[in-house]
Image 1 (spheres, rainbow, N blue to C red):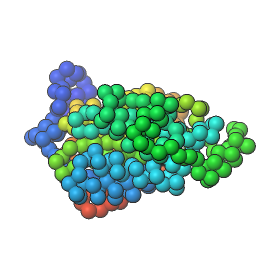
Image 2: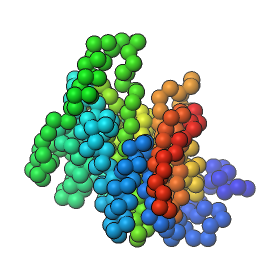
Image 3: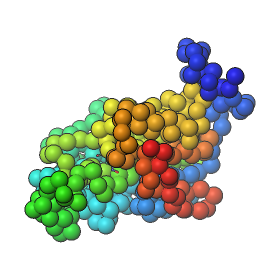
Image 4: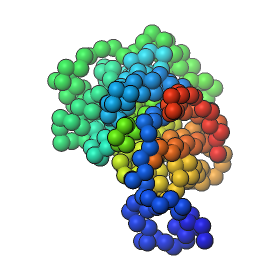
Length: 321
Ligand code: SD4
């Protein structure tokens, strides 16, 4: 019997918390990959460069992922993240982010306004409080108290597009909430073999004011277990939340799934819940402790950037939906 069918057909309770992959001799946690960075989407290439620069100086995976995602957060051309992000339906840029380190510590902010680097605020929440998540006004107040600068994040381009959407939003509009949003999730392994992950976004464009997606939710938009692997999500957050997506992928890897199969299984579970062809996009990236990567998306169009063995490259992913 194949290990997979063994797990699926009634081994519940027999699977050890850090199970082995069938032919490997050592548990995953003892098979440590070399420095690697993987990120979602095209802007992941520049994020990977910044993250790998940290790892090359022997920096931690945590410092690497933070440095990585700060690049698109500051880039007005990345209209799904940080400064220049597309606003909600009322014209406010509201940001969601979370970060996790190798010790299982986590920090997050949601519905944060006027602060360019939500990921760094999330890290401060993790390191300077015994809370995990701050939202809205409270998150902003905390950020200002920690010397983050208040600034207008709505660029002319994003404001003009939002105005066009408002003029014309109808069933014919082309700027609907489900289009053009590329959250960045960045995952890294450092020289010590430790893992970390970061996820940051302005969320779905023209969302209802107050809406929070999966990206700041630990276990939904991103999850790290230093014995197993790190996982990040992108796409329609509601579906990721409802399936605890990133946590699910980590748990599947713990049970022995390859990084690739774990991502595919988590995507399949969403597809199966929808009778018709799924129009929205959900995609996962995974970085297992041993350096193996996984990725899967519902529809064509998802891309991930991988920096490994001195090469930083962008890859297209064919949808499985
Ligand atoms: C959200 N997951 O707010 C985010 C959006 C996203 O690529 O990932 N876009 O639901």
